[in-house]
Length: 191
Image 1 (tube, helix red, strand yellow):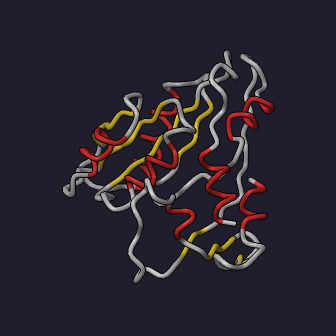
Image 2 (cartoon, rainbow, N blue to C red; image 1 turned 30 degrees about the horizontal axis):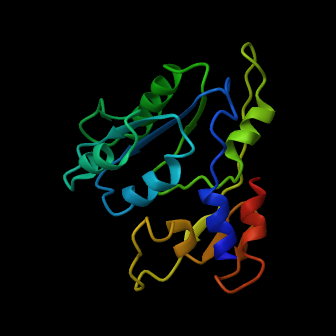
């Protein structure tokens, strides 16, 4: 099961397969996320053509990690607020999203990992064209695991494969462990 998920996560569309595909924008915010950022960047970099990452004055080197590990089309911007405020943050995220009205846009936190094999193909199939808009809804899964087990580097195994229990809050489901055969079917469904 882990090998299948790894293969699907690492599968990349063939070069030139999408000559006119709509661009994808990821907007996020962070404060001292140096532990998760390498995994988060490695996971999302192939999916998004650009990203705006709002830094809330991190002191653990998070911004430097993004600059070092993320594609050059990903930008770190300072928060407009000195301290975290959820309402103002939502406004910042929406304003950054509006800078790219023709892109597919999504806002994720650095603790959220979008898992959707065939991401670009699915978006292309759903694209309403230049004059249309479409909103997509995704089911969410929460990955949990034994934090006493050290994490492997992102280059060795994606974080979503290192945490073996998934909780689906919408339906109150606990989805298997690494050795359970049913773990990945609901995860790969993509909502």
